[in-house]
Length: 268
Image (cartoon, helix red, strand yellow):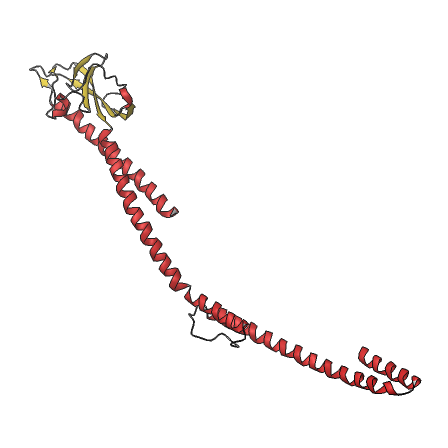
């Protein structure tokens, strides 16, 4: 579960980064489209800017916006999708030909991917100008794509997790079956129904089975020594007790002497 969770997080982050990169690439293409739609006069100057072919630039609140400003900040053109209430703070490029990108907040909780490119322009007379082309796209499409990817990821990872749990349960059931067999045989030995662990076990369990059988053999031999020792002890005690019992009918001195000798023997 931890491994799948970390993999899911990594895939989610990778998808987000790739989608953001594709969005910025798409915005760069829109910058080129805005610049390509400009009308140039005979002197090589930009006469005016106009909307690119993408119909979203002409649709109010379409989620795709663009505007062109001069170097002093004067708005030279903006798309028909850009309403007066929309206030966006675009990043500022470091110099001519440079670009700046990022994500900024908008009104009513909206967010936008933005890209600003500072384009230097020189007309036929050598006069240089610079235009700041600003393009923004609502993150709504991005958010929907990420949410869809997360749903798919959750469903497929859930199926994978369930399948892995079933497979792991089967593996544990079959893999631990020999251990359960060893446990049953040990209980049979404990009940006295058998003397050793028998059966054909996997080679991974063979050392354990040999060790347990060795332990059973050692315990059996030790128990046999205990039994023999107790039998010898019982036999050793029977004779002095019999003598003491037989001396009960003798005189007092003889009884005292017999008891003394047999007690010494029992002490030994």
